[in-house]
Amino acid sequence: MTPDHQPPQIPDLDLIRPIGEGGFGQVWLGVNRTTGQPRAVKLIPRKRSGSKDPAGREIISLTRLEANVRCRHPNLLVIHHVGQTAEHLFYVMDLADDASGRPGSADADYLPATLRSRLESGPIVAAECVRCARQLLAALACLHEAGMVHRDVKPANCVFVGGELRLADFGLLTESDVETSRLGTQPYMPPDGCMDVRADVYAAGLVIYEMYTGQPPERFPSLGEAAQPVADDPALAALNRLVLRACDPDPQKRFRDAGEMLADLESAETPTATRPKVAAVRRSLLAIAAVAVVACALGIVFWPRQVPLVDVNFITRPYEATILLDGQPLLDQDGEPYRTPCTVPGLPARVHQVSFQLEGLAELPVGDIDFRETREIVARWPGRQ
Image (tube, rainbow, N blue to C red; front, side, top):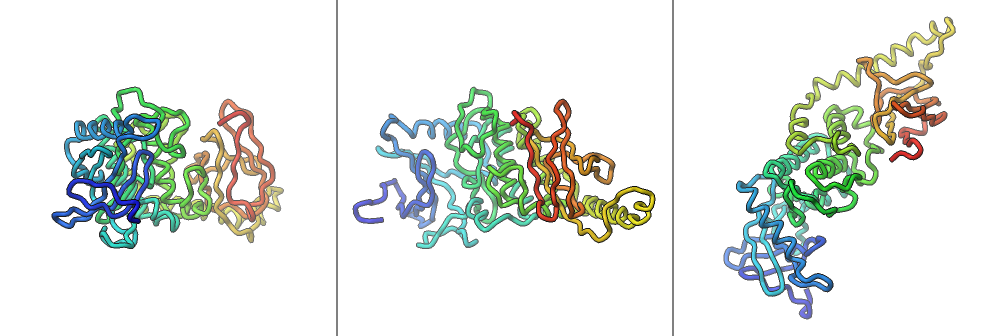
């Protein structure tokens, strides 16, 4: 901070430097003058060109939060104090951990630990994904139960304090029973544009998707390089199923709120219970290959024995399409058809004719696809989103 750009003056706090930026203000690293305790301080200017009082929206949101969420939740960032000066609205919060994993401090190299910063190094391991997903949904469920909508769920607004994920930034918070404006961060807003409780569910699904794929929300529902880990790991497969429902384009098909989504996560099958399913699919395909010689003698064509097996990701718009491979539907071990978007494990790495079927629409042919080179197939019915 240069002498010509002194930090704003806030009662009882020394502001050191900005550590975050939002649509309506900045987050600063501050230190309590009496206790020396480092804190995060959000500043929103009282006046801005073209806006009489940009802090007004934040005041309304904070008032709603205080009036409706009467008990503190361990996964909601704690706001210790709200105040005003002639130039700013400010509120004082817990300081996030350092991105290095150390506790938050006023050190010169301090960087706040957010989910966004953690995702910069790639996807998160399965157990940590489940833990963070549970904590995010618990925070949202607390707000939803209190009749509130967050409207800005994203990795940058998920911070880590004491190693625990906490949902932050309540500047767009509103009641769930009022007409909600189309406000939020564009990539995390649902296609229907209704910023209600189910919009929070949609955004939470995209955040969880980023955790286990390492891909931005614009890539949803593509699994990319995470296709095989999702196919092989029952915990990730369960998260993927959770996300597909949370991010359904039809809001009525999503979870009704974060509480229902959390309950679904908690009731998901354990890894030991689900792991045999992938193995069984692989075993069944190998068994088919083992009888190829006899089958060919009978004039039936099967996949050759020496062809390696690969996992392939199938995505369509609209979702819920049946996959046809060489004219036959792909079935799981229970005899149920795989439906898009999904990852199908253990497919022969050769050229296959691929098409999709969806009720009410004509069959959608994709053509001959070489699974040795292509592990993700994306298709869209003309004129459909």
